Image 1 (cartoon, rainbow, N blue to C red):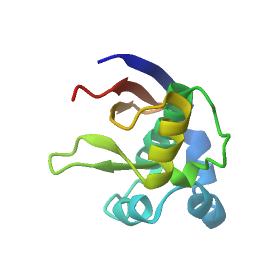
Image 2: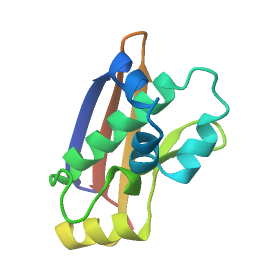
Image 3: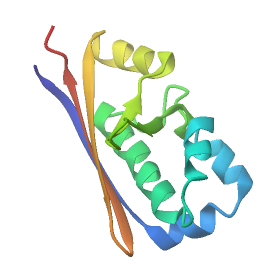
Length: 130
């Protein structure tokens, strides 16, 4: 296994709180699954702030930023059955990673955390041990 990239991002929660009041921002930035899951939360600020940070951390881990027709909405963060966050590996994400790194098998690791004022995400992209 080889680490191909790491990314980290921190966001101020109050910035996201004001942005998520705008429905256009939500629909441009978050996928349908992310928005649907957010309905389970009374205070959605930290939920969306962590996911926004994760999207930024992902683009840093691949080293391209928002290029190659990649949009925030293309990067979806979901949770497994016990609540662990993960990146949904869509065809578009797979194609971008394949094109950039010439690999088909990879792992994306994601850690999210928040507190009153800030949310943070840390991402590792590495080759998969097959």
